[in-house]
Length: 289
Image (cartoon, rainbow, N blue to C red; front, side, top):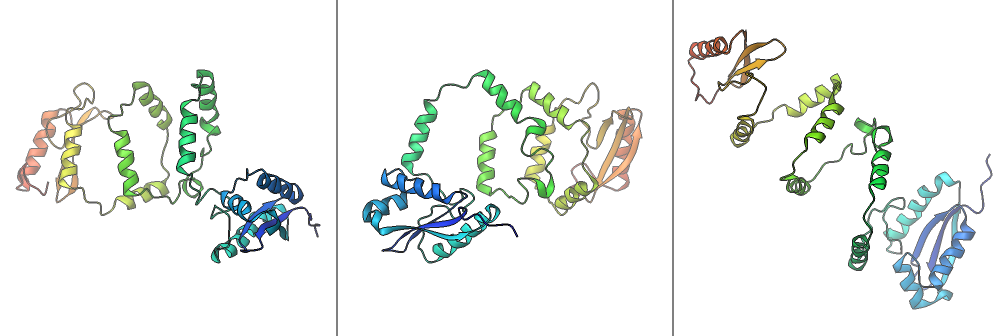
C-alpha cells in the first residue's frame, strides 16, 4: 500500500465567528499556509471575500485546518466534495462553483476596465510573433486535431438563438479572399465523410421543410453564378455534367426528384424535360414541381 504524503491534501481557512470557510488543495500544505497568511496580512489575497472578512475580524478569528490528507490525483475530487457541503449551507468564501475551472467567476467592472486599458496600451504584435503563434496552432499542433465525435471539445454543445444571431451579424459583409478560398479548398481535398457520418447527416435533414422564402433566397443567390464555359442552363431542371460531358435532365414530382437521363446537347435535355412535363399534365408554375 502506497504511503500517503502528510503534506498533501485539502484544507480550509475558517472564520471561528461565522464558521464561513475558504476551501483549497495543495501538494505542499505548509507552503500554501504560509502563502495565504502572508497574502492576507498584506491585503493582497486573491479571494476578495476572504480578504474583506479578514480585514473586518482580524487574524485571531481565523484558523487554518487540514480536512483530509490524500494522494495528488484525488485532491480535486475531495476539494469539490467539501466545498459543496459548505456551499449548501452558505458557509463558503470560495468564488468558483467548480474548483477545477473558472465556472461561476465574474470580473468586476473595475477589473474589466483595467484589463481593457492594459490591452489598449499593449505594443502591437510583431510579424515574427504572429507567425510563431500561427505555426504553433497549425495542423497536428492544434488542440482539436483529429478529435471528432465524442472526442471533440465541442461535442454536445448547442448555440443559443441569441449566439447564432450575434455570429450572423458579425459575419455580415465579411469577404473571403481568393487565397483563403484556396486554402479551404486544399484542406477539403480528398476528405470523405464516413458512412456513419453520412447516415447521421441524412437523419438530421429528414423531415426538414424549406420555406418558400428560403427557396427564393437560394434561387436568387444561385442565379447568374458562373459554372464554367457553357455549363449553365437557364432552364429549370437542366444541368451540365462535367464528368460525363453531357447535359442531364431532372424533374420534381410531388417533391420527389426523378432523373430523366443525360443528353449530348442542352436542347435534347430540355426537350426530355418538356415531354415529361406534358406527360404528367403539369406546368412550370405548378407548386408540386
